[in-house]
View 1 (cartoon, rainbow, N blue to C red):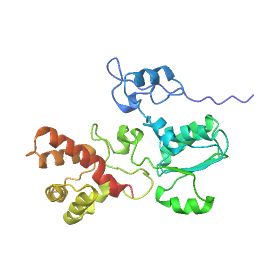
View 2: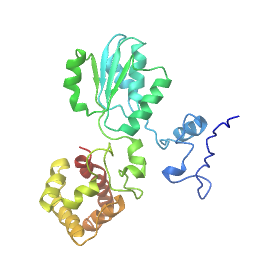
View 3: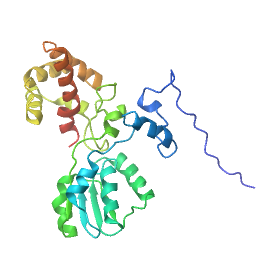
View 4: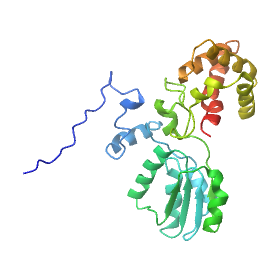
Length: 267
């Protein structure tokens, strides 16, 4: 008689103290389908559960779009699917939404969640591509009745240290929405010139200290000190901007880590 193969028991993550602090320790928040009470408790406190993203202005968007059953729509950034779910509900089973996103990891999770709610491929098509392909999709499907473009990264990417978007905790300096494509921000910095970096910082967000920062970062790398974590990058930035008032220095450091370098690394 063949013995049934059993899935090995996986022990939950251990952590110090009464409550988990690190992203990977928040196992209940990372499994919302099993621990709904925990999710509701976290949201009630005004926080966003780990691994989730709470969409904003949902009703305002629906009031503006005035979606009707039978229409065809486009969601430029699928993300966690909060806006998409609300728009799908407006279709009442009639019509179709096409959604794009370049994050394969989160897109797969969102697709599964929406399928479990009854939104399958008959009413929702998810494409792993940049929203700039909207013209191609519109031509293919005959145009759109409504379009939503809520651009930018989401909590799922920012909160997870492994994705390399966070300045709060140490993580690899990656900054790619699709970690299987292109090169990481750390690899980009390995070969970038001072002029290129200064131009990137200026063009992406008009950084007033682009020259000073570009010099400090490239000088550090030339000394043999590779900048391959978010903490290392933040420390160089804060040291360079040490002449600024403390509040402005920290604010500008956050923007540099989460905005400037992500732009080139996630292309």
